[in-house]
Image 1: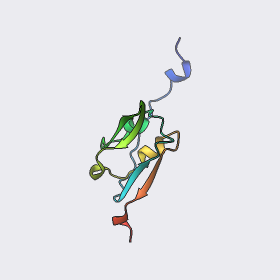
Image 2 (image 1 turned 135 degrees about the horizontal axis):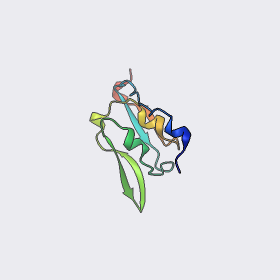
Image 3 (image 1 turned 180 degrees about the horizontal axis):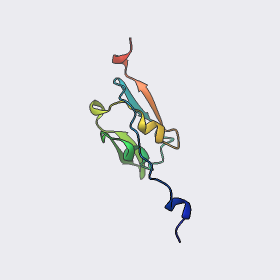
Image 4 (image 1 turned 30 degrees about the horizontal axis):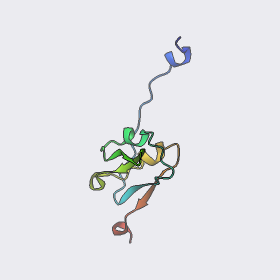
Length: 91
């Protein structure tokens, strides 16, 4: 059975956040459930899900190509991702 409200709802268009050089996501493995939302929203595809002790967790695979946009932190429903300013970018 289809939902009449969803049939008349326009698709959501994602507006990417501007890059913030010098910022990187810091994933808290204790809070990450491995849902993959952050991986799906990451435009430069620098995040992935890694398996550690039978548990999935988001990981930053390619920090050099991360734009620091914070889309991953914003989409995380478990607040497992915090954006951190790199020490080299401070000052």
